[in-house]
Image (cartoon, rainbow, N blue to C red):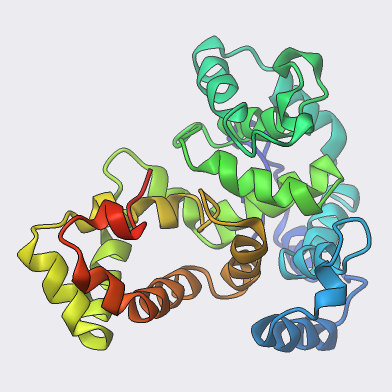
Length: 282
């Protein structure tokens, strides 16, 4: 368990006893804390918890949901791998083709954030570092557009770069989000099919309107899954959905889309062009 924390060539070999020990690393936060956070997040974090990024409790909730303390314990207790050294080795591994792709997208991600505009080769651009490390960690998937928004959202609230990276790994592996970015995008198509079925059941008029206009559902909604609703959405809106996404994965995104389509139903049905009602993707 948790072997996804390590690049394939760095995965530790251990006996079954060591493996069992790793699976039961004691964490500082109890299950009751996580249960409390789940209740709070589903009700909506109180305004004082996210009024400012510097004083909010959101980082605490995200770190708890993503088990970062446990993963750090696994690195530090018995795995024989220095997490800091491993992370920076991944960041510094030469791969010019992927570096160019990442550099191009980093500057487009939250362009108003000066931290994401720092030179990518300076070692100080945290967003670039996380995406570069992941591209070397998960060689099957590498880097794909959309990941930059998920990593960027994490960094807005988790100032510690490596904790944000561990949360990113949690989303990609524990939540199996990496399968959205594989070449055949099989899981993305599966999620679009699920969303289409849900729209047909819950908002049939909108579904029928889309069908009559021959709307491409994957063209319309794929960015919502690939960026976890972060792309082009107001931060105060997208971060609340991101809270739910960490807890409920795709169900949170599908439910939000259905609710939005229901709220916008009258406006959508008035127009032949979806561009006019602001539901088009990038």
